[in-house]
Length: 295
Image: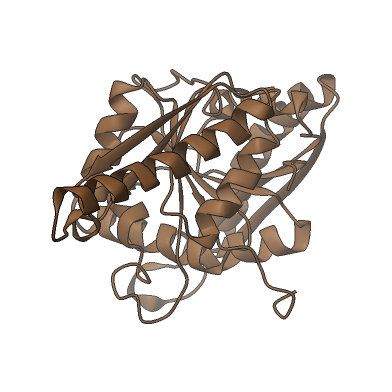
């Protein structure tokens, strides 16, 4: 899938135009259209004590968002990009999913809304629900250091693969971005149970097999002109993936998500949410590809 259209979701407090600018290197691949989304959450325009909807406040927030978007759109028009805008009142998750489906977006970009305590918990739940309901990758954008220190996320991504369908989808997604990616590191965290056996020979064979799969995957990226390095580690996935990203000086962590029911923690977010909680890097979560029956 090419990234032709980005859905850029911002509440302004956590995501500004410089973040979008850091993604504009995707024009060298296929990017041609950006859709801005600002969701005015209903509690912000509901009067205290349940006395009703504050129309004047909603209008004020709409106009404030519109001023930002007009300025941003002008800058994008000058660069030859198409622009769309949604300024809507409602629930963040519902409105984002609806806009992504209507616009047939190829990537949803969200800002990090974590503020500690319960707000952090609810922000994580929102991310998990958008990911669960989305048919396209979801990016949780984070500034690398100080606010407005925006680095191109796709420059040096780290791909965490578990060999599942979402990981294969992530590989296909990234292989089309050879014009943007300077280098990719591919990490597989082996299950410790895989490295248990009756003999050292059995354990060594398992390790060699996993390493060979990683090397074969790196060869695919190399064939596309993307320098790639393989890393095989054993232990707790989220901690090791975040550590590897730091050691490799990655600009983003890419991971898939399993949507098979009965996977317990994975169904509720699992590894990708643990990664997002533990890292200060931007994360890209890639879903399982839609089946023919789902389309």
